[in-house]
Length: 284
DNA sequence: CGTCATGTTAAGGA
DNA sequence: TTCCTTAACATGAC
Image 1 (cartoon, chains in turn blue, green, purple):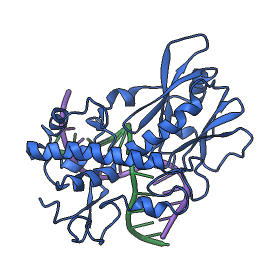
Image 2 (cartoon, rainbow, N blue to C red):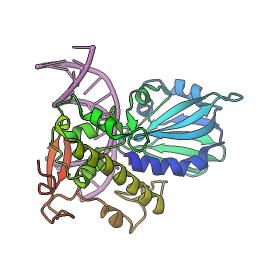
Image 3 (spheres, rainbow, N blue to C red):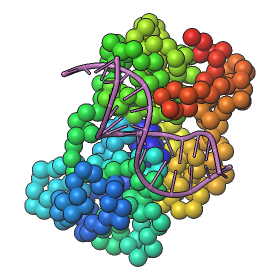
């Protein structure tokens, strides 16, 4: 599910459901998602804790936990990987297939489902420590973006997806942002002039903000059962998938008309990922 | 059968 | 050391 907007919509959804609850149990069904500590170590760390908050930076989500009778909180990091889903359900519901981990919350439970098991649950903070500025925070400024683009030989699209510099953009929104800013994905990041960097900065904020607004308005099925999967780009409730797909300007639209100029959108591979762009609007 | 998919990270090379 | 590229992870959709 997961680029910044999807994770933020999920965070907003979960926060009121989780804050104030106590973790009454913890079960790992797919040990691979707990890394690098063992499931047993993680269990010892979270059992009996209360949830004080739900945070996010980039695509990383975390629960602020506190031991009983303690005010000090520590983050339990959850990353959804490519196919992770996180939702609250009644404890007497059957667990869905591909459930990776379950947090008991009294008569409710928090389920982490992840078919591909690329996601992660951990008390280690290494990943968070290395993360760059969140693309929607006030700290993400034009000078910060200039700095992220300097001293590198990489193409701008690759650099936009580097989470150590800017946290939150993945393959979909990197393509979308570049099209909105009319910047070629193949431009050398370090050679972009200030005007283009400003355009990209604006495009990042607008693209992500609009997508969060869209996701906040849609009725999402966070339980992720069947074809409704709590996503607003590949799924959500029936009849909304098409509508939300129309929100993409170039991603997944190879051969279709560019919404700005009508030319055919192309797809090429960059760093083993698909890059969708309009060769007319985004000329090198 | 084959191709592609929202992501991170370890490993190896320059 | 730093920077960069690639392979690996595991499953489903089409």
